Length: 343
Image (cartoon, rainbow, N blue to C red; front, side, top):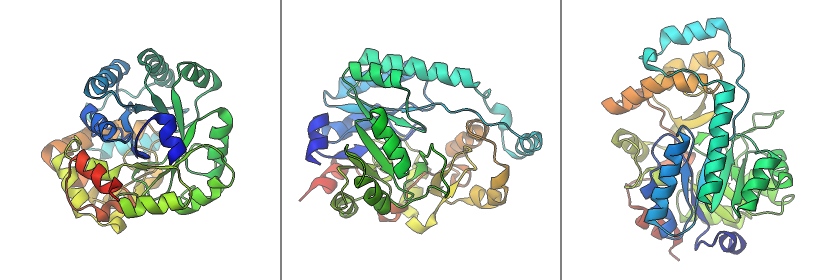
């Protein structure tokens, strides 16, 4: 942990996961950094100038290091006409959905964000869903920005190290939210965190950040004992006072057991782990008809927003990791960090 914390000039090797969708506020990010960890802004689903505003808000709240996470665009897969018609007829309030972004629009958004990150000289940037190209890596490193990749397999970790990442988040299958898988695999790329750490530690030589199912000091110590240099924690920080997650979402986090989560593509078109609810159970049989990301994500957004506004957890995406069963109260970030770091 010493090398990693020294590189980023933070007190504790604890990263708050960059969870896109609105739950992560500048206040949450700044608080994690202020108490010695690395707070993380999520730029996914946020317009470039909004991201700039959030970066400046964090800077006003703390002088300590933080990171910004960026989704690397992927090719949009073709859709079957019958599947498009199926979900058009099936999804509630789909008429309120925004236009599906074209691939070139996603790349323009990404490039604008990369430029802003350089202009704002953020301390660290992490990437999900792919590895950035050599030009992007070069430009960010010229600004002295620390770069973090996301891997779910040894093959992905080796590629990220080869391309010049300074550290790698190893996302175990226990993790809540979207899978960061980006390379083809013979299996399902759902390797548990402890096996993943062991596999990658033997071949990679840059700091490794363990993510997935870590909610308390016990699980954090276990990941570090296996060779991780730091940990990334998401679900525990969702259940914080500084989190902007809806009250019904936070209540679901306190009530759920780890065995009540499952992987699904239903909400976004990408594999993601969340608390099983009525909509997931009803539509489970239609997983093979799910539209590719970001189409499914855009089309289910009105349903999810309406459900959150109505306090209806049964049609929300309740992203959570398998460690959710160990969360029993809504705490401040200060209290969470104290629990994680007390000797």
